[in-house]
Amino acid sequence: MTYLREQAVEILQNFPEEEMPYVVDILKVVAGIIERRSTEPTQTTASPTDADNLKSKEAIKESWERFKAYKGIIPYDIDTKAELAKTRNEKYADFI
Image (cartoon, rainbow, N blue to C red):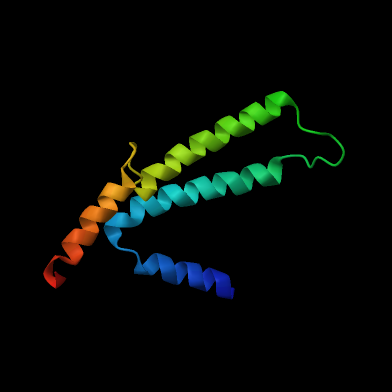
């Protein structure tokens, strides 16, 4: 087994069992991307058409939405300055 495979197996073995469904989903997405790359014809001189660009943008948006589901990104805007001020006040409340 190669060093990279050993590293990957070691990382997977250290994941908690309840996180494995997420890991499997991510690996399926990665495998799909790799499979699509290997089956796509290489473009040497042809430039992508508008339809290809649109499909690519849609695929990227779809991938981003799936990715956000794993990263726990909140789907609404947060007032970062207010959150930072609140957290700072909580953290340093004992120093005042």
